[in-house]
Length: 174
Image (cartoon, rainbow, N blue to C red; front, side, top):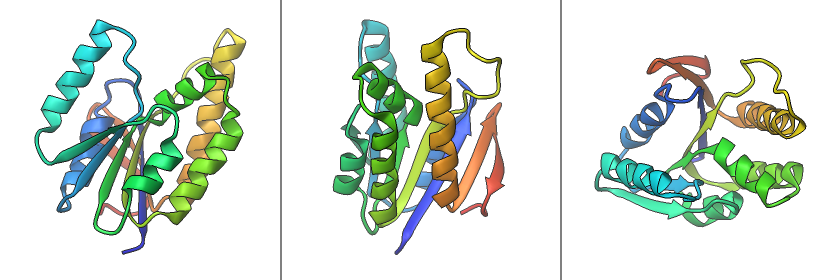
């Protein structure tokens, strides 16, 4: 099997994660969920616990807020289906850690080029609204937009999800 990359974009609560999970579970396991969220408070801990419960058995969860390229290299492989949720949280984590975001994004693209198997990446589309009123938010939006474009260029499929409905922007339904 060669690399099979799908990028799933959408707004908050659009149904993008559910759609991405369906793409992954449509294939036989193993299924690996790479979670980029960091738990900062009780509400987030409850949210993460609910998501794990909703996914059900059969998933291996890997929590990796910063070294996403390394996690992909360790867990993606022939016959493995990997879901990364989500790229925008990963970008937030990198920015909070004062990381070199363009360099880390390049590392992610290198990792994607070298993996075998199916990788589905979920991300929030943040470029559809007004221009943010502060420099940090504008930098975040710009990093996200560039990352989405770079991944879309190498992905076999790109879907945009709104109201739980996927619109395929690139490729064919797997």
